Amino acid sequence: MPPSTLEQRATEPPTEAPARARLAWLDVLRGLAALAVALHHATYYFTPRLRYQVFEWFDPGRYGVLVFFLVSGYVVPASLERHGRVRDFWIGRFFRIHPLLLVASVLGIVPFILGIRGLRAGLEQYDPVIATLAHVTMLQDVLAVPNTLNVLWTLSYEMVFYLLIVALFVTGTHRRSAPIAALLVLAALLGGAVLPTAVLSRAAGTGRVVVIAAVLLAVAIAAAASSRARPRTAGGILGGVLAAVLVTVNGRITPWEGLVILAVMFAGTVVYRAQHGQIGKGAAALGLATVLAGSVAAGVWSAARTMPRPDAHVFQVYWTGSVLLAAFTFAGVMALRHRRMPRSLVGLGVISYSVYLLHPVLLIISDQLGGTPERDDVLRLAVFVCVLVMVSWTTHRCVEAPMQRLGRRVARRLGSGAARHAPPSGGDRSASIAAGAPGASVTPAD
View 1: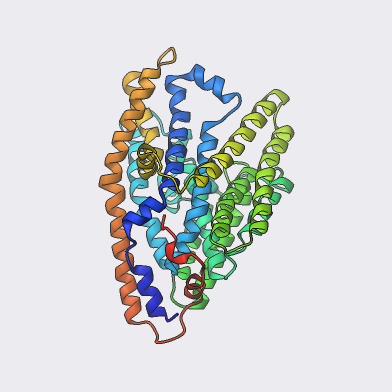
View 2 (view 1 turned 90 degrees about the vertical axis):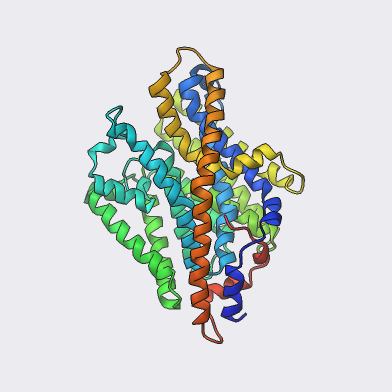
């Protein structure tokens, strides 16, 4: 396909109504995941006894983020391939994630500025420039820098995933999702429990590692977004190597869990590829079974090696329950994707990013204004959820949606300029890959 034709297709705005109907099941998953994480943290404040009883067998927070990671794995690589250009992918990611992230981060440090409470996890002990730079990269959790808000750690693994899929895309190996997912979970089993955490930051200093990582990240993204093949490939590989190194030896969480998270995300990609006929169903089933069994086994084995027996047993139970329930939730909602989804859950999914980022801020405000109840207070929990939904709807409407529209306009404008200067034949390797992907024309953008 000539580059000009592909670029015109890539910059055409999608038809919103059919896309919304087609993706309702993904919104339901997002809504369930965001609500689970918000309730996980809210029950600390409002219903601690109830939370303790649930936590003995099930971790809503882990369950929620695992569902989120499955959805990201399903949608994000498809978004990259739909656009056909790495540059458009990074523009979309920036305008989708960073504006609300900036708002939430600023709100998260307001209590510290006002002297109401300290920053989370002693963040005030870090150089503010270094801490800010780490958060701008979105890699702070694998740079040994505490998160401004407790939920931001997952965004670091989203960023790692973005770098990895770009590396696979520019090298033409992006269809190998099933073996990659299996290899990641096997790495978690075989070496994840013995790999060190934050070893680079301890050896070279957090500030130095943050600066080097930020420079490498900027170079990798800029090069991968190039219209020239060699810089694009080199940039993609550089970003992938940076991501792999940080996860395996410099993460805040233990490497086995970081590797399992990436395996879960690639499992979501496997589902997408099998659904669209890009890989065989047998290979997909084998890869998914390996990830599911390996994820459970990695958590169980790591707990047995590193925790006292009573704590290990508790962790093994709720880790296993969370992994299995996340997998069954994704599979169950996907099986119902052709049916009409509940509007309330679809709507919750649309504002799920706001729900996810803003609920810790509202909990801080609630704690300062109303304190923590001595007994379980289900009414306060219900009021909190209602307020959270209203605030999230507002920020989605006033921050998220306008910035996403701006991102699409920027991508279209840059794409139009590129199309005017495109050569009459040939084209880049990434565009050719995307053009040949079955189902690419109906792939949603996340």
